[in-house]
Amino acid sequence: MITINGNNLTLEKFIKVARFGEKVKINPNNREAIDKASQYVENIVASCKPVYGINTGFGKLSNVVIEKDHTRELQKNLLMSHACGLGAPYPEEVVRGMLLLRINALVKGYSGIRYEVLEKMLELLNKRVTPVVFSQGSLGASGDLAPLAHMSLPLIGLGEVTYKGLRLDSVTGMAKAGIMSLEGLQAKEGLCLINGTQAMTSLGAITLYDALKLEKHASLSLALSMEALEAISDAFDNRVHQVRGHKGQIEVAKRVRDHLVGSSSITHDGEKRVQDAYSIRCAPQVHGACLDGLMYVKSILETEMNAVTDNPILFVGDDQVISAGNFHGEPVALAMDHMAIAISELANISERRIERMVNSTLSNGLKPFLALNPGINSGFMIVQYSAASIVSENKSLAHPASVDSIPSSANQEDHVSMGTIGALKASRILENTRKVIGMEFLTACQAIDLRKIDTLGQGTSQAYAIVRSELPFLEADTVMYPLIHKIEEMIKAERFSLVIDKG
Image (cartoon, rainbow, N blue to C red; front, side, top):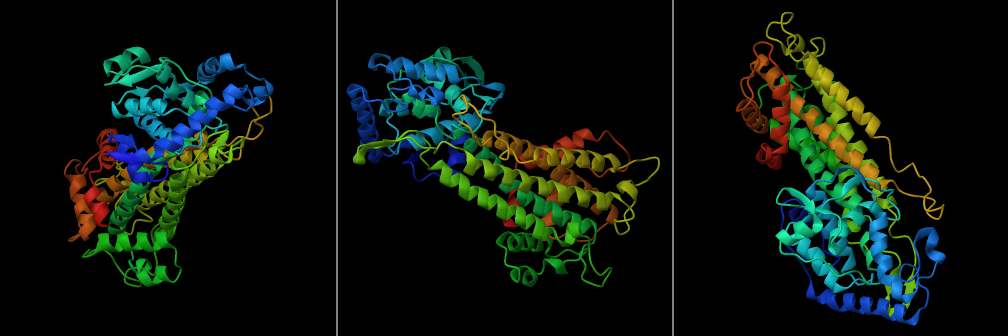
């Protein structure tokens, strides 16, 4: 069981809960701060002093004072009115991540929510009752309002949940798991639940985790392509990369060298040619920059995972409530755009290596389109077409979402982040890039067989064996899509994990 305290979440812990269902508890030391903040809200309500989010309206309606007897109704209305999500529901792991992240933000004691509400959120998480949250409808400021409203509706017996594969109304679904909804929310609690960046951060973190794994697969597919093209290894010499100094570049070059140890097909400067094309020779620089970009995104997301993103923020010890902008998604939005660009570049350079292998004028002696009998057979001609189509789609998707802003709430919220749109685009780019990397695996193995290489490297030989355990060498044309879909599934199922983790 993972214990959270508002400060100790990492990407790895997050994935254990969101994807793999590890249970969660709140550090007992956080209880005092949570209770003090909740009592502080009660005192403000009793005093009838107008304080934003506690006894006022929201957004442009913040100048409307709410009478004490209506503060609970205000919170219920807030969740109902803000649940305006559209599109396909998020995968369950994304919503589980949202719950975890929102709890982790609220346990720090700056928000004013009751411990009882946090316990109910934990119960949903630990019993795997997952709110149905729609993927469209967030501007990324004031936080992910619509998605978080959908996430929170089941707490008060509204909305829908998924339980054991069934999509049910929340009362029915929660009852099946032995969970009772709350009788209602108290002052500020609805706002506590929806003011934050947890949708974009959850989706972004899941995409990042998978992107870091895919980046390692890209190093392996690069090494396979180098075998197929009898590439020059000198450009991967450690000294070359140390004198530039970028960590990602150094790491990628080392991985590829390790994968190629013992290979009989790899050449040196001047043996067969003086230098290779950029998609081979500059791959450590390109892949490495992508890796460095992903590590930057990791630092931003891990900070956001442990951040207070509420508004207003209660500083109980100072007897002060400050309305500010920690819900604004700009830090995450910029990171999502950076991640989208980094992942798309892995696909771009991979597709260029596919082209080199299928193009007989560039492949250093391989048959046209890797067909054993070209002409009557088209071989891998349209594999490259499909890869080109996907990378072109990625280029459109990689346009930054964060440069856009549309004013909302009668222009009170006049600059928004679009961070959740950025996270959605990055997730789509990741899926696309996995397909392209898979096609490079498939193409390289076909080329390796045509080349009749005596000995592959220690990593490439293992990868080749895994591919050939399920996908054959093509002696003649066949229906291609099952092969392409299969290699993508193999990467997604982490069939190459032992190879990439050694590299």
